[in-house]
Image (cartoon, rainbow, N blue to C red):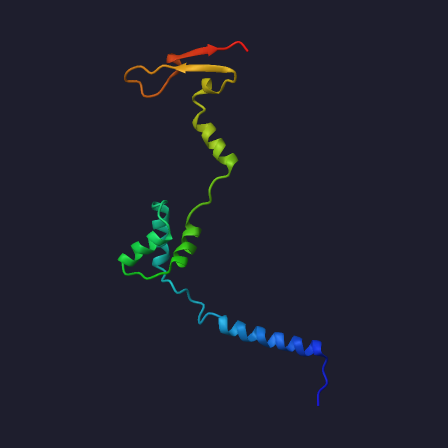
Length: 134
């Protein structure tokens, strides 16, 4: 006869249960289920077609007789797409694009833009400065 504390018995039971579920849920092999040719195809489709979601890409792959799940496509899409820029990065990008219009960022002055026939963009030559007395 073996005398053990109830805590020891519960610890053994939990350890055995943990081993059982680890063995049951372990993958059959460590090789990926998706072939190596499909992953670059998914990443290329997601980079070239930014508006396509995983279901659309999965549909295009099905047309090529490649069967993958939506979740698999999502996993490889997430790796392929770069993250969205932060607010500071986006504002810096917009400011660098608008740097050639220095007259557009003066506070407390309003401008009236006049477009002439055939002119696509306003230029400082056809801008009238309107100042207001506050």
